[in-house]
Amino acid sequence: MPESVLLNAGFFAKSCAVLVCLCGVHLIVALVFYLTESTSTKFYYRQMPSDSSETHRRAALVIFDNRTVETELNKLIYNASVIKDDVEEPAVLESCPETSPLLVGPLRVEFSEPVNLDMLHKENQQLMMGGRYKPSDCVALQKVALIIPFRNRDEHLKYWLHYLHPILQRQQLDYGIYVIEQDGVDTFNRAKLLNVGYVEALKEYDYDCFIFSDVDIIPMDDRNTYKCSSQPRHLSVSMDKFGFRLPYKQYFGGVSAMSKEQFQKINGFPNNYWGWGGEDDDIFNRLSFRGMKISRPNGDIGNCRMIRHSRDKKNEPNPQRFNRITHTRQTMNTDGINSLEYKVINIEKNKLYTKITVDIGKP
Ligand code: BGC
Image (tube, rainbow, N blue to C red):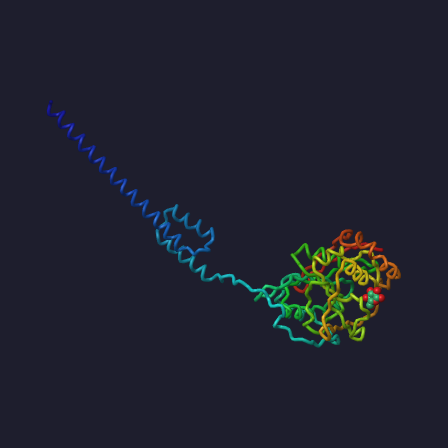
């Protein structure tokens, strides 16, 4: 074989050997790189707090994808741990006790000094918009909507808010205040406004208890809890106006409490009692026709005060009330929450309450 051919063959063999070496080195480098990356990722995930958000994980991956240097990774890990330290672990709250330890018992209630609205706002900074509150250190036993039928009683409303907000908070309730204002000047209809309050409050929150309260009645003892019981509850049992006793056994006016189930069972309240009187007697009839009994607080706990006032215009005693209450059994299935019609005119929310102005029609 000529010498030049042998020389070429030798050169070719050497070149091949170098190429094989280069491939080997490349393979080793790739392998080392791959192994380093996967261990770091695992390490990073081990370091991430277990509750780290998806955002943090994604941020970590972006950094890896961009091959950002390890210090970036360390910074991220550090930040994640700082975030974890800053965010308070949400405490698991226990249920509030059956009887609140914050209650003080008998209260002094008087209406000689007018209530200043600015003061009222200042006193109630802890409220959420719309007159909503819930205890911060325990889970309230009931979610309570307080419904107040209303027209032209701003002074009374201020007293009511002044006294009731602190009481309801001491009672450790998760509550909201709904003032349901009748629009226009036609005859007042308390029970229909209460029906509206029930429907509107439920649109906002999953309330399980409803307190129906006149705007001018203030409890004189915070042990008279504004809560629902296994039976409908009458709360304004001994009013100063009636010499601190029940005017009659079936009396269910002033302030009462009903669970959602109890209210549904009686098809809510009648819509056709226009003017003063009778609607509370109709409600009493509905409850007894559905086999329920009224529960009431004992003794002095049920004392309450009514703000004296002259009779409202367009709320004269309803002459039809005596006749109507004799027909509750026939009317209650078709007149109530299932036949309620109204139009919302305005919803105003401030710190102290939610006011819903409604057109409920006329007699
Ligand atoms: C009326 C009720 C009222 C009660 C007490 C009754 O004659 O029908 O509506 O609450 O008197 O004033």
